[in-house]
Length: 371
Image: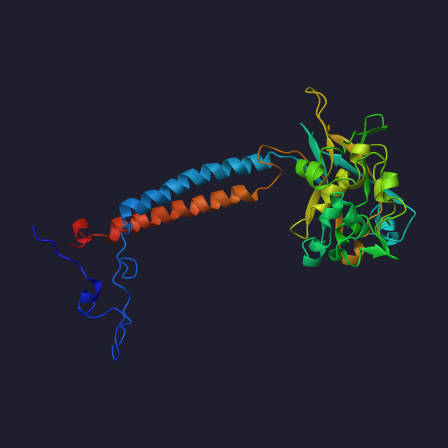
């Protein structure tokens, strides 16, 4: 058995005896090396798309996506949601006077009440949201206007906030806590819900203010300086409250040390910026107490509002939303519609291609694949 040696340069036209380094007058070849990678001879797999493989794929995708989409759409529609706008744009609105007189510099609170009726009872836990429109929390400078080290309780960041917080970094040389445009624009309306019974008396609906923030935000990202022992001493004197705030950070919830200062859950929820100009944020939770009675029975209700947050200056809108949830979250029919649409298109294309295949494909299958 004779062994044969292989030389790539011989295949390229170079004699085996020629020096690899070359002498004077030798022209170096520009041809790539004769390797499997450079000559594109690596093994590869290429699928052959035939009617027997493409058509079943279209039908399978359609038959899977359509039922999933129907299930998601029905689940979303079963979620009960009620929304009421209390901006006060119209003159006949109960909050019209408050909306016209509201400003950041106004220290006198304005209150208004909005009556509404729930046609259907709300079962299980009910989530109360506040919603804002035409408010661009996704603006680049707005999103960057915060100091995470300060919000984590860092003493050095408290005394010298980040320059990203400008122009809400210091007031007359005194550092602001918390600094930045996000904290400065904290939503500060107060919402209270009352149920009107058959006798016409008002019964306050208990609203739970804890458990509305993400666990990681509450216990990891946000911390008070020096713990939660005495926030008045920790913040007073050396720091200033944000420009648009009516009270300092250590008075956000003085009755509950676990919900005061930087770890106040209303503050934490606001600091998680929204991606779109129309958004909602969780405000309170109405917990179900009895399995026999609904959380919010159908009937008349009154929403009492302490109107503090001005929105007419940027053509914004404010609203209150009551909603239940399901295993897929809140009400969102888009996902179900998307699944139904994609599944229907695939199934329709499968039918069209099947008709074309049986009507026009008269070739022999063995002729499709060349030898």
